[in-house]
Amino acid sequence: MDPAPPPTDSAAIRRRNLGLVLRHIADHGPCARTEVAAATGLAHGSVTALVADLTDRGLLREDDALRSGTRGRPGRPLRLEPRRAAVAAVQITSEHLRVAVADLAGTVVQRETVPHDLAPGTPAAMADAIAAVITRIAANLAERTDTDRSSDPPAVLARVAIAMAGPVLDDAAQTVVVAPDFGWMTEVRLRDLVAARLPGPAVTVDVVNDANAAALAEFHALQRNSRGLVLIEAGTGIGGGVVIDGRIHTGSHGIAGEPGHIPVAMDGPDCVCGARGCLACYAAPEAVFEAAGLTELLHHKGLQAAQSELLTLLNCADPVALTALDTAAQALSAAILSITALLDTDEVVLGGLLYDWFPWLAPTIDARLSGRRALAPRLGLRITPATLGTDGILLGALGFARRAVLADPAVVPTGSNEW
Image (cartoon, rainbow, N blue to C red):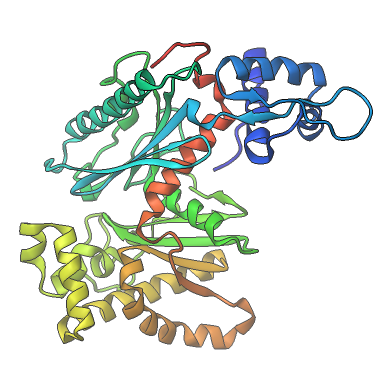
């Protein structure tokens, strides 16, 4: 996504500067005001005023003075108070809401999986379920604060990122354009639906494309000297994300990096997107389970049961299951060849259920890519399983929410005000 334009009014400038100070201390602290001023380019007096604001919000504290052996008054190092604010991520799947809560240091303090049996095409019911989870998280934080004898300000739920399988517009409403896997065939303002169901003053809610969140998390987790990465993940259908120069690329309408609807066969089956022979028709979980003879198990016991049985069959070298994975691998290979020819990325990462299937996918993918690699060996295209396994989406959404609070700490109230 493109960087936001610089703020023009004084209130917006102050909010941005609060973020500059807090992010520097979160990334490099503890550190003195002089260090913050030098690193951010802000005047020392401005840093002092901003630190006072952040301290009043309970986000910073001063350590005892540390003498460095140099002349002058010793600095008082500033340190992040990570427990003051929490962030949460809610990943929407076809059967569950996967939930995680973390503090501002990024430490995950809570995980849970909330089942749902919502009918397709019911975004309002989904908003009800998500709002109930958010309300409970906030109540749990308040309850823990009541039992804490510390005199510090109470912990607050500052931001929630909802990870959704479907293109999300990079606009003020963060509109879900379409989500065929959930039966959402028209635009849904999911953030507004959830926010309307929360008690006020409501926590800040964001909606992000699930695979975009995972792609950015994988890019940082790999810690390689890479300019570009493409993630392809299977969970609710086939999703993906494109990272270029450390930033998610969403395209003109928020749908860049959606590999599930790249046609890989001209005479393939009809796809819900309106095209034919899309990658999702061969490599999405439902397609793979059907090809492996597990449709009844999927419909009666759910995705996790079908996945467990598929892995058992694969480990037993069941020929039907192996053929299903080989078909998925061939389709993935065709999509990868198209994607890498267009974007020239260094790495393609396979996540979600593709991470679990990787040992059976890799041989076919390597064979199908061998000609391209032989023609241009210096390109060094890497196909790897996800570093974060099946947690990439959830951790990526948590990271999004955490970075958003560090960038705009004004969402955390001053004094003892609570959400």
